[in-house]
Image (cartoon, rainbow over all chains, first blue to last red):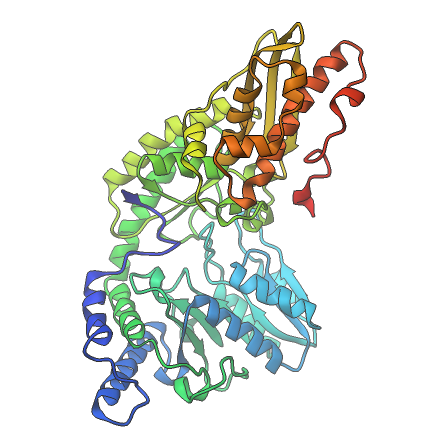
Length: 381
Length: 144
């Protein structure tokens, strides 16, 4: 199998699993317990917290473990919106559903929401943010990098604008963290959501970075875990795994970016050269190293994925058909793509585990698959 | 989401795919917004569907239902073809995921719309014979 859906999830790194194993077996203590077995588990969590904090450029006491990136988004957005004085909140049109649906929920509950548009490459214009800010704006949340088209937003510029208006700024950095330099201090964000399984860590663990002094409500009530702000007995093995995965991701990042981008660029060049009537979605340079999103005229995404799967290639689509919804991708529509094109996109997301041979093989299989589906399509001109 | 083996078989090796050059009935249903468009070509002689072919833009289920629906009406009389229900298409395919049921409705509509075109070409009002379209014209349920 050729796995090129690393934006969906990544393979757990064997060395991460090794570090997790004791906490799935002999080290089963509850970190809140007073005896040695509990204290050891607690110490392991704190070590992992320090590791994630160091990669994020944060203090350890600003790092809160959660059950996922989506949970971190939910906590940040609802918690910060409810803690704000104003009832106006701002986000972008191309956010992940974990963010978008929080804003939709808040809109139904008395908040006034502005969805910032993006340009044809998927980038938010800082001037649009400036213009959208009102005296009652209480929260701005804009993703660091998009999950479908890989576009990287000018976060430091956007956060600066937010702070000029004394408005807290959150970013969903689930796709960015561990893949490109992402330092909360350099970027100046007040809160950031990240997730372990996007960078070779386990599923079921995320982090919300909350800058000290940021006003945010409690998300989970109960015990005193996570500085009393997120109750739940900790997922010790998962947290330990996240700590190691974050450190491994940061190690030699520049080299990995070079390698993964070269796979991406080779794939893009080959596909655009060999297949007529297709277009690259997203920005050609301001994009995640591993992300490719290409729309093919006249064909639909799910059919494309099924045929690739039959050839042993695991990829994804901008088309939400895969998630059971009939709507085409809101991200591709926000770029201004027509509906039929938004239904026919392919997302390939590479990791450092992929090779140039795999890139060539995917292109080789893709060319006849696209031709075949076009032959089948009544839209083909 | 899991497709039945039968769906995957019809998707991977669709029957009756293509166009009929001298078709005397052509129907097209669905819209670009939904992401499913089915176009059906028929050659009808003496009220019998001698040949039928399709072209479909859509997901795996849309292609499989097109393939199965055309199989089910091939060689049949118009009357028999008009009795084809989306349920029969689903059953023949050994089931469809709930979210893909609309594809079977689209396939039934595509057959009816093609037969309606056959009558229209002869100056006969198809509505009393074929009935009115149920879905996926301009007021597609996907718009809701």
